[in-house]
Amino acid sequence: NAGVTQTPKFRILKIGQSMTLQCTQDMNHNYMYWYRQDPGMGLKLIYYSVGAGITDKGEVPNGYNVSRSTTEDFPLRLELAAPSQTSVYFCASSSDRGSYEQYFGPGTRLTVT
Amino acid sequence: KQEVTQIPAALSVPEGENLVLNCSFTDSAIYNLQWFRQDPGKGLTSLLLIQSSQREQTSGRLNASLDKSSGRSTLYIAASQPGDSATYLCAGILTGGGNKLTFGTGTQLKVEL
Image (cartoon, rainbow over all chains, first blue to last red; front, side, top):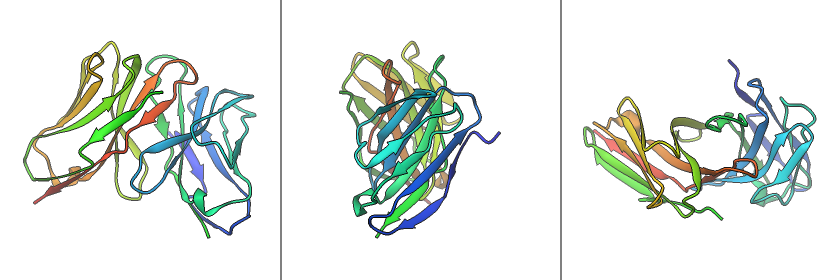
């Protein structure tokens, strides 16, 4: 089982560049999430989605955009990258029933210089 | 707004010792609480999930408890081993609004020979 997959694993961006972090899940989960983790910190929610076509802001959405055109995919777009966006990005998904347990991808380590 | 706190931030113990990691949350309307393990430079591994209707969950040498009235959860690790060395994160979900996880900042555990 693939679960939640993320690409790329690592990326270095120059200030002002843009990129898209990819996230795909094969568990038919309606709920998907993007978190960032800064060194020595817990995870903070950037954006989330409760189904295809529905997205909403989390705690730290500035500088990011998302879309959800299918149940499986939830890409995160960085426009005009800044050093403050250097972080590790995790995507997660969960079912909309039962325990709501979240399943995480392996993460993307992004450096903006 | 749900806030999650983990104390201590770091802990060092000799091999074989039983230990308890603490997690406090501010909103007693928590639906479930997840404990995760994170190894350096790696993603999150879900250890245990406790639903609000449960008081505890066990998996091998791990036991997690949840006391909603006091706003506390504990993770008990029995007979600690060097392989248990990692950062342990707790995260709580409030239902509604996407069932978002709020993370603590983690406890960094080192088990020494």
